[in-house]
Each structure stands twice: as structure tokens, then as C-alpha cells.
Image (cartoon, rainbow, N blue to C red; front, side, top):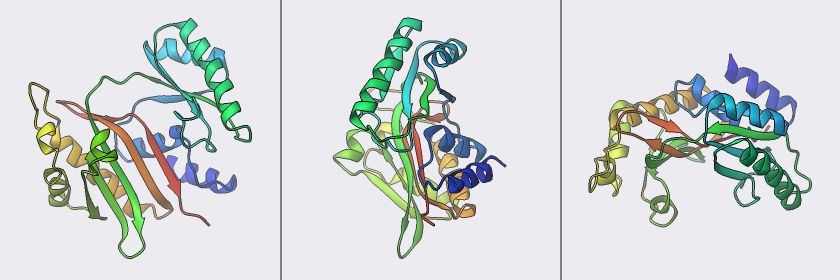
Amino acid sequence: MIVDEILVRARKEKRTVLTEIEAKQILREAGIKCTDTQLAETKEQAVALSEKMGWPVVLKISSVDITHKSDAGGVKVNLKNKAEVEQAFDNIMTSCRAACPDAGIEGVAVQAMAKPGTEVIIGMTKDPSFGPVLMFGLGGIFVELLKDVAFRIVPLEKKDASEMINEIKGKKLLEGYRGQDPADIPFLENMLLKLSELVDKTGDIAEIDMNPVFAYKQGAVVVDARIILEAD
């Protein structure tokens, strides 16, 4: 089972932070749709993966020691050809090594650019009193400035997932606002239920951050993900 393999490997390496690739493998195993993200250890591998996935692509630094990838210059988006990928690979390595000289770097994560959608954030933290708690809200400034999010204790039932989505102040944006496509709300509810099931049966996980999730008229996809394990 992929989840067990990843958790055992992380424990052997004495780390609690999973890579984005590992996090997405676990979420995908739980039935949650994520963008295809693969590791390139070299510039040549980054180009080959980009050509295989199709343009444009995104490159992100792959390192468990670099949590804030953008701040370290570790993210390049909308790369449209071989030359741009090669330049982005070099820039990411130079910038991240300068910003985090002691970080272990395994390469870059390559993924195809996701089609823009309504930006949503879904996460899980552990409350000292209540245990695992799921969070749902709109992404971007809605979560950064307005804290427009809803919480429920795991395990969730279908009505809990529905209530979480219905009680945020920005719900109208999910219903389609000023000509924008509505979001696939039943799909988002199902995503919350699948995450709840994963958390409920995997006690080793301390924190999950799915941010952003792009919600579409039909379906939704996790574009970036982070998972932190419980300390031993």
C-alpha cells in the first residue's frame, strides 16, 4: 500500500515532513484528485517530463527542508518550452541553495499547469481537545485576510461536509458569481469526506494542507499539498 510505504520510509529517514510528491501520492490513494507531479533530479529529466506532460508546466523545488518554496525562489510557473524549463531549473537551484544553504534538495517537482478555477483551501490539524479537525474555505485573500473558513471534527458525515461549504461567507462565489462558472459542490463535499476517511484511519498524520484546490464546474483538483506526520 502506497500510504504505508511512504510513512515507513519517512520514519526510517527520521523526518516528519513529506515531499509534495509523497503528499499527493497519499491523497490520490485516498481517492482525492491531484495534479500529476513527478520528481526530476536533473535538468534533462525536467525537460523530458515536461515534454511528456505537455506545455505549459510548473517547476517547484523538492526539499523537505524548504517549506516556503515561493519565498526561497523555488517555484516557476507557465513554462512553455525546453529553454524556459532549463533556465527555470538553474534559477530554482541557485536561488534555493542561496536562501537555504543547509537544505537537502532532491530535485524539482514537475507538473502540468492546471486550468484556473475557483480557488479553495482544504486542510486538517489536530486540536489538543477534539483531535483531528478539517477546515474548508475559499483560497487567496479570503483565507489570508478574512479567515472565511469552516471547521468540523473528524469523522465527517455527508451533512457535515455540506454544512461546511454552506456556512462560509463566500459561498456565492462557489454558486457562480457575475458570470463565473459555479463550482462542483457535490464533488467538493465528496473530497472532504474522502479526506476525513483518510485522516480517521491514518493516525500518524498531524497536519494536511491542500492549497490551492481549483474547483471547476465539473470536478476539482489539488494543485499543491503538504502533509506533516506526528513526531515520534
